[in-house]
Amino acid sequence: MIKFNCQKCGQAMKAALEHAGRKTRCPGCQELIPIPLLAAASTPPVPRPAPPPVMEVLAADAPAPRRRPRDDEDDDEDDYEDDDRPRRRRRREKAGQWADCPKCGCPGHATRVHWTWWGGLIGPAIINTVRCHDCATSYNGHSGKYNTAAIAIYFGVTFVMAIGIFIVLGVLGNL
Image 1 (cartoon, rainbow, N blue to C red):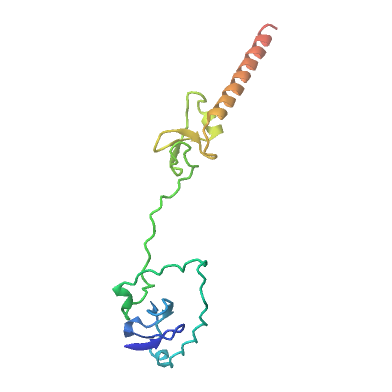
Image 2: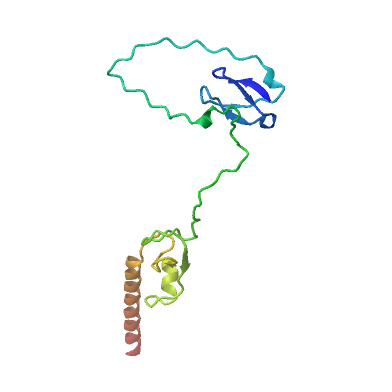
């Protein structure tokens, strides 16, 4: 059994030999302190500091915060903090390679769209169109925005280019 004192308040404590080098909470001041190795445990106790002078508390002052109720487990002198044990991590869904879906918020789990009725093979490649796995919404995979405006612009530019080609072919055909 290792006997030692709290470094902050001087509270006498003891711990089993196998807990040497780990940390425990002082039952007096709740400070997290290391359990010394056997050689360092024989140090003399730290004297308690003098209590601060008592000051009168005015009724207008804010009430002191409540302390949590002590459990029976808090009184155990052999308690220690097991720092070697891995902590449980919150399971967090990993983000996919695309932007989040604007409709359902799915974190980037989408598939690239290679062909659409409005743009064939070229349109979806230019606009970076992807389809969400959860809600099947098509959106821009880089910005995470809907493709409505981009499709309208693509459709308009394609229409103007087609009209231009027909005009040029019509002029060349009349020559």
